[in-house]
Image (cartoon, rainbow, N blue to C red; front, side, top):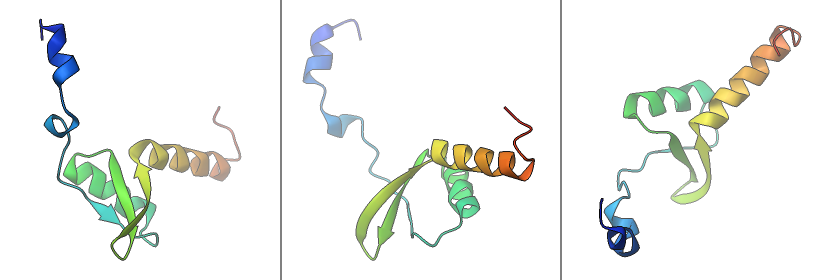
Length: 78
């Protein structure tokens, strides 16, 4: 880490995680969130068949759940 040339030579393959997890578009938000927690990951690939169509992030889940909670409490949360 003391060698700045190390970063110039660092390749993506050295830091990527080859374990990928996916969900289908019909998966529930809670199931997707549970999988992320259990697998200790922050993103899931959304697939139709074997075709990736999107990525869902843990941040997306949290934001969506918060917005739903605000609607349920009639926006009493700011």
